[in-house]
Image (cartoon, rainbow, N blue to C red; front, side):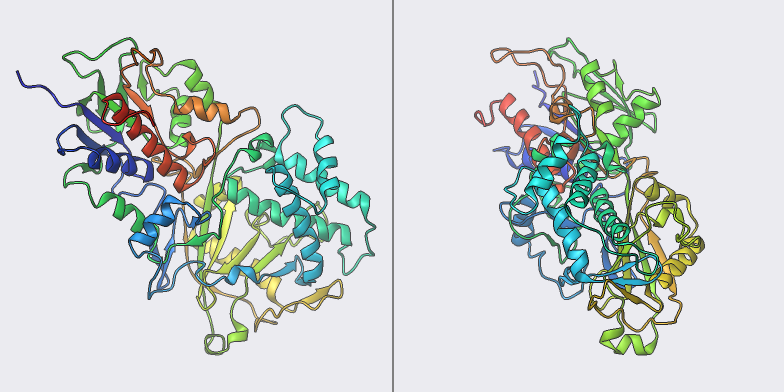
Length: 530
């Protein structure tokens, strides 16, 4: 009698899925312990990692940063593969984002000293929320927390209370060219809030759980981008897998499983694909995004038969998952701007009016008003980048290119033309745009929200959920079992949304893939307890 090798199927060829496949394949002593298959619904590997080119430059359409290089597995792979050096320029390669120019709506350049005060306030509040040691403005932060008045406060409420507490402790200056100091401080504070929205994917920080901030972890050390592109990491992880293990264009529509079944002569899990074919397996590692899982619950078109147990569906429903999109544009530069270093496009931070003030420029579209900044992807690039989150990011996906080019050109020109300095500051030069309308010639925007394979960008802990919901999402099925008689591990879950302390990151996805691969290796006694 021929003994069947256990068949392990991985759904999704992103960071989590490929890491799991890599671990399962390389852990086999003879290379024949398991049959491993990776089914990817799209036409490429990488998932939410997608390195591309635009305007002659290498860009990242998805994941961009290594969030701390100390002990980061992604940084280690990048070092080992030589991915941190490149002759071709790449996004954020030169520290250009350390030298911003801040301009308030109406073209008023803001004193760096004023920006620094509000930046320090915002950063100290974030440090307090994240449980770090804080000295600057600690009393303000503590007061902000006490004023939240809720068992489940949001980060957004905490931050706004912090700003109010700061205002209670200082006197605001007189009005200057339509901007009072208080309104200007609020606009700068909102600028940082909008950057935080892109960090977290929470369209509204009022929906972001405060308590979860202290659980979230980053690696120590600087944050860097990858010279040869993030896809070089994916390609390295996938390079050891044999031909045919990864199958593209294989979209799974339904997963049949046996809640009370143990292994017998029949493989207990059956996958049904969009092309009408099916495939049986002993174990399935599901790495689809939280957005896809949410969509299937929302549409009542369950991906699982029978449906997932209620604790799973509740976790999926409660956790947050948002849309963040990147907007790349190419600047139509003159010969003088190409040769004159001082005329290069700046790292432009934009402070917009926050109220329904008549001072709001009616030519600025609503979907740009919560964009914190726009900047060249590196100092000498003609490609500039803006980040959008939430409903603004979703709106961007439905606009045509011409409208984007016209509206962004009009908006940025209004910030860069004829600047006036606010608050008596010695602000940096805005370059050679005085009195000239800026023109963009090409546009490229991501569309993560409407991509059916992702339905958004990354996860966050929403108000009403907690890190426990992340753990529940990560639990394998069936759920019954014991140490002496473990459950048969039919369906396992991986992906950034399943990692309690590193959700929303590539290394969180990496760790989750390792976790589920090791779970199966331990199940088959290929490794001891971890």
